[in-house]
Length: 168
Image 1 (tube, helix red, strand yellow):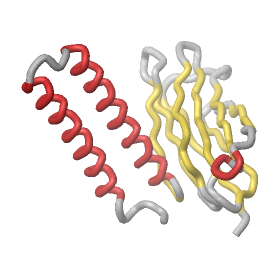
Image 2 (image 1 turned 90 degrees about the vertical axis):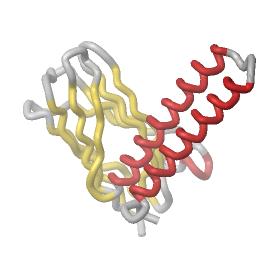
Image 3 (image 1 turned 180 degrees about the vertical axis):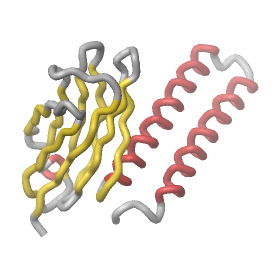
């Protein structure tokens, strides 16, 4: 089945005409890592935006960046499949940082990936903090083991919660 991927969404919170969403799309990422095609989207006055990506016969990859007057927010490397119709909700806060959420066909895959990335980043930060403390005795090693176990449990919990909602 050869069909495209549709991305549509809304920017919530204060936004300006110069704000933009940059979508980079790798059509053949998995097989031959060819270059990306980039799309610059400008939300309308209501914050709505959309783009239809080219037809694909195998999974591709997207990266999404939101650039506003205060910051550039980046969310990267999400796999998409033919026929996906993904809603991207971007919510601005007062300091220019933004949060992202996904829904729609294929959106659960991206939402799960986002949560796993956050859990992995948290584990990495905790591991680095523990490593700075040193491994002078068995208590430090036990603490590090506890961190890894908690991180692994969190990732398993995320995967289990999405088990029936992810596409094969």
